[in-house]
Length: 78
Image (cartoon, rainbow, N blue to C red):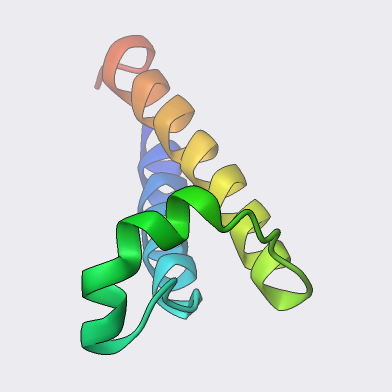
């Protein structure tokens, strides 16, 4: 049981890394660095299409990662 949980934890961590790297950046270049804070604060554009799917998958993968890490660390002691 412990080995299976560790395996799933590693797979989920790799999936979370891939999902984060697949997402598009919010701002690009030097102009994004200068006005990036205001653009993110006042620009309330919702994600659409593939960005929305990647965002939701990232949230799900991160919740699974934290719950599984808790289970492995505190409940399933080797």
